[in-house]
Length: 157
Ligand SMILES: [Ca+2]
Image (tube, rainbow, N blue to C red; front, top):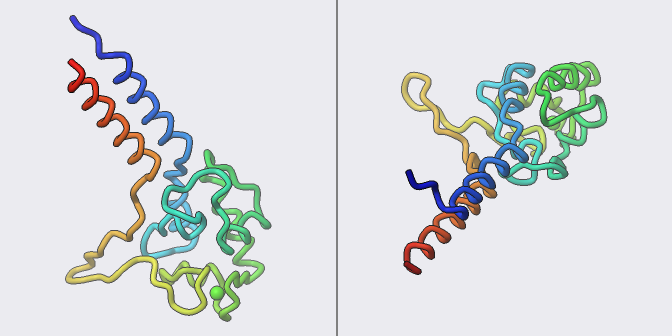
């Protein structure tokens, strides 16, 4: 039986390594559970882009969370205690008069002065449109590289 080409195995390994290194997939659900948000908030509530990653949680809400609790991308159980501290302190990261936790509980962005809807519109019986920003940029780039490598190998034969 033929084994897959070395380049193909390397690209697959990089794709899996990349997505594991940048993802905190449990955080949106943990924030939703702790705040009562009507939807899991998008990664951009904390991160500068939907790709996430270490060092990119720079939004005002993320800074407020970091001030009150030790957070670790691998441990979503640390979210709820930090949320409770923000609730107790009535933290208002955007200074609009509504606390971060009240805004998240109402499905609003605590980084934006005013409404900043996080959950998108609903139509019909509770249906909702998936919020934008769920595409992992690094995984997309690696997938494109994998496709190019496979195409180049195919053309070279
Ligand atoms: Ca606010």
